[in-house]
Length: 398
Image (cartoon, rainbow, N blue to C red; front, top):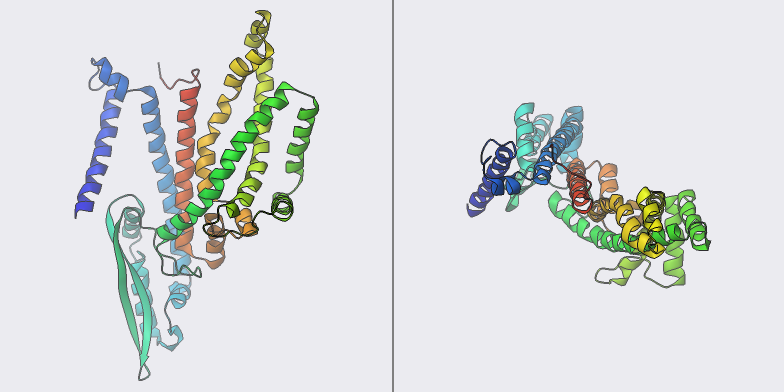
């Protein structure tokens, strides 16, 4: 009960805060109180709230599309194919028992004859409202040639998001989708965040040096590396780095739980690949800035090339790339299927492929919704970061 009270109280406070900010921002209330208007009616805050609102609409559309996809798949052929994969001894039941139990299973999954009620229940389960959910196990038992249908309920918990359970993915059958996604994401994030640090730490200096020594030896080597990444298929490039890192250098070939070194090979492979794109765009933006009027004016004043490069040009050229950092960090949560396959990492990227192959619709819908949330949040954070670091950006309507 305490969880419900706290959860719904927080939801109510968020709604009240949004309404209050909108009223202040549109000068309906506190229009003669500058301090309140500056804080709760700040253009960046108002812009963020509008973006969050549009993001919620996008998420609801994604959830609705996923709902109909799951419904069509589960109900294909009257739902017998789906139900027969869940219930043991399906072939030993008579037609009447089959249909009755299949209806019960679909009802437990939120699929009834009322589409609108089901969609509302689906929204309630996925959106962050406190709710109590339990895992329901379906089975049969044959006693004296009579088939008895058994339903057991266990592992009840209070949660904010209920994405259902895993049905057909080997090793995870019966688990909550949120638990499986969370476990896989932690592993993918460990690799992805190391790779993101490598990309930024190597990509930015590489792009700066390529721009500074344009058409020099370092620039030519850098462009050759970038072109090679574009020319060689991604999977083949991953295997090339795998040979270099694992065979020649001696890093672990497969992921081992608790062994940090086993994360380095996939992280370095991803990082060395991603840094090329960063270096390319840093170089382009910096070369564009070199032709700007303020650079010509700085040179006319006698400023050194290094001062112009690092104090003026780099500051302006790096702004468009800063917005990509939140997306890179959050994108690390989603993993990369090819890298996970090559290095034997049981991450989120592989889960998506397995969910598609096994037609595990609830695992698939969980990944889709989580991916949509991460994408939307990363875009929002990118805009906010850009506004903070680029004084030319203004969200004021005046």
